Amino acid sequence: MAKNYFIITVFLMFSVLCFAQEGKQTSDGLGFYPNPVSNGKIYITSKTSLDKEISIFDVLGKKVLQTTISSRELNIANIPPGVYIIKITEGDTTATRKLIVR
Image (tube, rainbow, N blue to C red):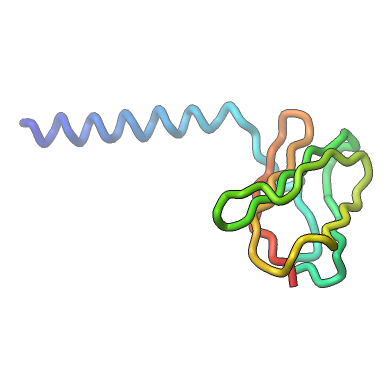
């Protein structure tokens, strides 16, 4: 009987976490190219032309770049080669992706 309560509790916790994530929209239309980057510039793709807040983190979670851009082009030439996480926010839409800099 206790096993059933445990399973129900885990299911409910998982359901609550899933519904909490629905409040934040993620869009496949919001992204960037090229990846991997070798020329020091990335281009942000979007369905709208709002300002975009860009945050780039290293694998340890340290923020290496934070900026807001109104164009599509972002200069990342000063970021050393490695693997990063890029977070792009435009209005209510957020996309988080892996970024490889060569």
